[in-house]
Image 1 (cartoon, one colour):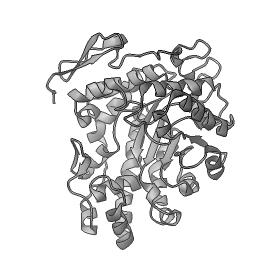
Image 2 (spheres, helix red, strand yellow):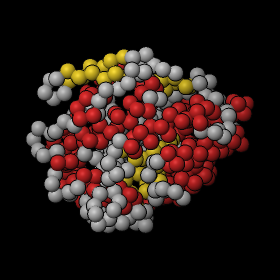
Image 3 (tube, helix red, strand yellow):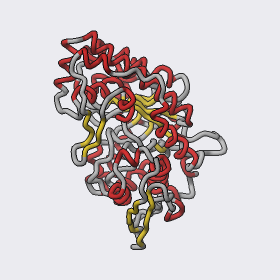
Image 4 (spheres, helix red, strand yellow):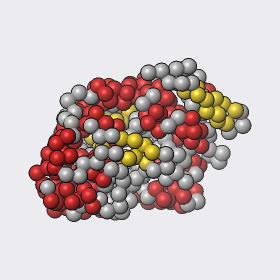
Length: 400
């Protein structure tokens, strides 16, 4: 369906007024062909302009991007860096786009979603592009009534609260209804230099089940735990449906061109290790297995470092670490035969630039130059984050 044409006004650093056109009229590309033009840091050379290192880490010697080699724990010239929510509300240009386009409309408009991420990668000088999408659209073809309500976040209007509700959740046998996501993968890959790999992603079964059951976000996940403890058979039925859907979804993204995939278990930290093993482990393993035969899988969870050995057991060539544990200790728990990703506290980016640089170096020091470290935050960039601090972080990682 053709969308109505709308415009969003933006200004570049020089004050020039810019316009993007969203919808059937096409998308003119300002500032070098992209919506979010590269804006150099006012106080130091932008990372992508540094002459000593090729952009994105691609070298004639290796023939492959830094990130892919780090995922396999191969030697790298420097630590690769990308950031969760690197295209997000902290960027004024992104906010300008969102003033004109709703979140799900942006996700479902492949050309625009790709341009948002491509331009962000170019501006920040990071080493990977995660596709611009969300965890929850996967649930729509499974029969969940999803809405991103203004100011409220995601809302599922028909939550799964009882065994009978589990029965009405559909098996995802065909990912065609999610074809817009695969189009985003293709468009993002086509718009980037080969030195920048594209990361696809999906929610992990527990996190997606939590959204299904709670009907949105939650602090205590009481409805989720109630179904899990009281109706274990129905719980496993629901988790099995979601795990199979995630597996098919990830494989479809890989077939569309994703070179790495990340599985986000954003809410699983509310569980004990015992409960993770009983109620979650097998389903996470099933969700990851097919993708792991094709590309590196980053398995990321937050909220409970005690789960790290179980994340390794569930699968993933890279284990994502949040900020609640020191990186070196986390790597010991995961095992040095796996790569790790992380793990700066996102709140550090709210501090002054010297603190950002110091804390970034502390994470690098804990990695100790061991092959297999990908620098990232312990969660997504906060909306209040100054852009210059993100640039400072990227520069500090590249300097080593």
